Length: 282
Image 1 (tube, one colour):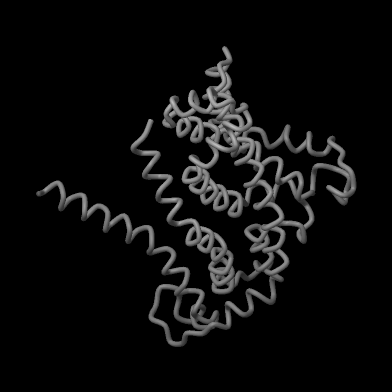
Image 2 (spheres, one colour; image 1 turned 90 degrees about the horizontal axis):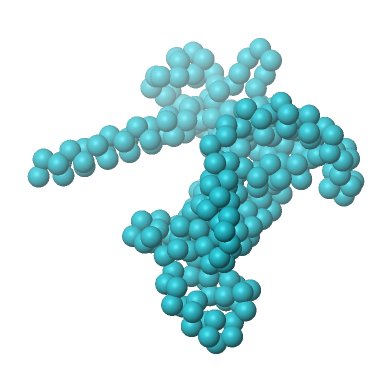
């Protein structure tokens, strides 16, 4: 009984601590700058308005940067899931002697901090040339394609690890029956494995969308043109040289968070199913 009470109290405290910064950001976004500059951010409101949201949308040209985020996030998520599903299937269902070594390599890639490789990666991006339909500058640096490549590279290992463990939970008898029926390797992958992995793929799609959409580091370091950056890094455009309107930035941050909430709501059922199935299998 005491354990249940303690666990419930812990969950309530953790939920409050998680939600409190979001509620405070919303509270700041609803207050005019003159109100907070006079009374402080931690004070009772004297006036609430939606003007900060309107100004954030118009002053930062947010629709344009939203589109940049879509151009980066959607292809990156699709490519990562496609490659990860194929690699995981080969590692689990195709008998190759180096399967374990390859899985270790993919998993070890997640242990490498991004900041460690930024200097050599920056120089490599300045050396790699691209056709002009992929990059206006003709280089991997300062291109949306370059951000897609780096996001795919860093997210692929985690997805391979998750999908390989999930595919191990699929009974081998199903593949033996498909093999007896004459199913090819591609048929066993596309017609049998992928449909069974839909919950895991939906869960990973939700996580990848959130991670790639919210990326700030790569967009700042590997892109110099402000008009090509995604919406998260474009929030810096609202910060002045001498004065920062935190109310306006808070409103812009709340607007920028909407697409990830929409993705989660659309994939909520599959996301929860993927997590629950992954915790009870394998």
